[in-house]
Structures are given as C-alpha cells and as structure tokens.
Image 1 (tube, rainbow over the protein chains, first blue to last red):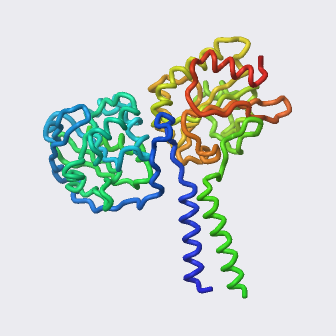
Image 2: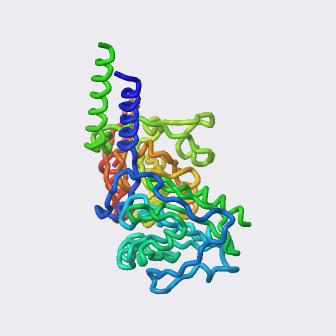
Image 3: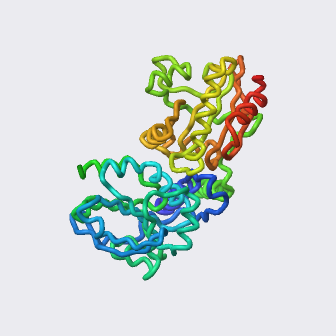
Length: 199
Length: 193
C-alpha cells in the first residue's frame, strides 16, 4: 500500500469521525420539524466587503410588515447583521433565540440586531413564531433572491447564505466580520468583545 | 504482506466508523435503571455553589455520583433553547420547593448542564433567569454526546446509594407541567418518600 493511499484512508476516517461526532443541541420547541442537511462545506462564498469599508445599504421587508434600511440607523445605532443560512435548519434555529434573551447586551452597546435570511416572509413568520417573541427585526432577502447576501459576499452556491456576523458602527463603517463555519454557532462572547470595542 | 494487512485493517476500521456514523447510536440516552456515562464536571468557582454541592474547597472536579446527597436532578439545557428559557422560572421554583422543605433540603440537588454553551453563555442564562443552582458549561458538546445528544430541555434523575453506587430513575425529554407535580414524581420514583 502506498503512503498516499494510507494517508487518504486515514483522512477519510478522520472526516467521518468528525461528521459522526458533530452534535447540535436542539430545542424541543421545534419538535421534529427541523431539516438536517448534514455537515456542510464550512464556507462557500467570497466576501465582497471588508473591515473599514462603508457597509452597503439595503432595503428589505421584515416579518413585522415594515421595510428596513440600514441607512435609517446611521448616526443613531450600531448595527449587528446576523445572516443565517436557512429557516428550519439546525444551528440557525438555536442562534437567534439565544440573541433574544440578551437584548440588554445590545442595548448596553447602543446596538440593534438585524436578522437576515434568504427565506420568504411566510416561511420566516412560521419559523420565528417557534422562537417566542423576538425583540429584533427579522428581514427577508428572498427576492431578488439573496441580493443583499450577494452584495456582502456571503451568498453560497446553493442559494443559502453563510452564517455571518457584521458589526457596523453608527457611521455606517464595517468594524467586524465573522463568516463562521456554517455548521457551528458563533460564540456570544466573541460578538460582545467586538461590541465592546465600539465604546 | 504487511501492507495488505494494514490496508485491510484500515478498511475494516473505516467500515466500522461509517456504520457508527450512519446508525447515529454512538451513545444512548441514559436509560432508566442504568447509570450515567462517566464524565467529570469542573467544580464551581462560587463558594456558595461549592457548598451547595458539598464539594471540598480544594476539589477541582467531580463526578455526579460522588456528590454527598441522595438524589441529583440534572437538566440538560441550552441558553439558545426557547423551551429552556420558558422553563427556567419553573425549574427555579423546583429548586425553591426543595430548599424550602426541611425534609428534602440536602437530599435532592439540582444542577444544569449547558449543551454547547460556553461558561460565558451559561453565565448569561444564569443571570437572565436568576438561577440559584449550579450550571455547568459543555461548550464542546462532550457531555451532550455522552448523553445521547438529547434535545432540550432534558431531565435526568439520579439516585445515589449509600454504598456509592448510583442508578438513573428518570430520563425524559421536555418541559414539566408544574414544579410541584415534578417534585412529587422525583421523590416517588427515587424512593425518597
């Protein structure tokens, strides 16, 4: 057996062990309604913005029925954009409920959270209803499909978005970008540390 | 020859891993009548929590069956779980009922394990819901995997016997209806009353 073949087999074992061992705590709130896509390619897009740039503006419909622009927060609030890949999937279904109990952390940093997915409003309505009442706007980047995600460079090749966080200051400048491994939830403390830097 | 043997061994191991991964039964949920999987928790830094658990000042880690009590109720929760958030006041009430009853105080201990939650995230949950009993982080899902990757909230009742052995008497997913009825179940099923 060549060293190359041995290496390939061991690599396959390592990948399978990782996949088999990947675990996601999932709330019973969703019962059996979460579709599990399995382990996905961690990142499948290329950023089109960078720290220090002015954040591209957008105008998206929210689940609450209003339209939300990034520009409307200029000079008033720091903004955290939380792109999540898709409704009714693991990890995503846990991430926002966590943010939902830390409104005081965002308030303390004079920040608003905007949740964005490429799903339609009806889908987002049904999905976010399972999370309890969310204090932050949830925006639909459904049509033109994923246009905002694409403008930021976080639209994946399958039409979902990355699991990505953007921290934008009151001047509209991007101060932090975390395009996270889609299979894992970003840690809350990392985000809070970045918000601390805005003070 | 050695090369062929090595190839076969590796391929067999590969097949075993595939079967293990596909079957999804790497670890089962703790069965009633069985025992907890073997894991340790880091002792709380807070002196009050350390005292609640009866841990020595020097102890850095412990196993749940080592606690000097008769029953331990373990909640597998997550800061990110809406049902766990909604359940928190009821679990707090459960703790209050135990601590407020001289016949139960000291005999039943309550702890939470935050599946996939860092120490910071567990701290956020504890502060948000004013949780008085100890919560432990499980940021890398290590314990959650050993517990069969249960959904949350999940409750496990563990009876600790005088000879140091232990057994699981309750292992169930989901929120409970009331703290009072849940506590009655715990005392009845554990044989405490």
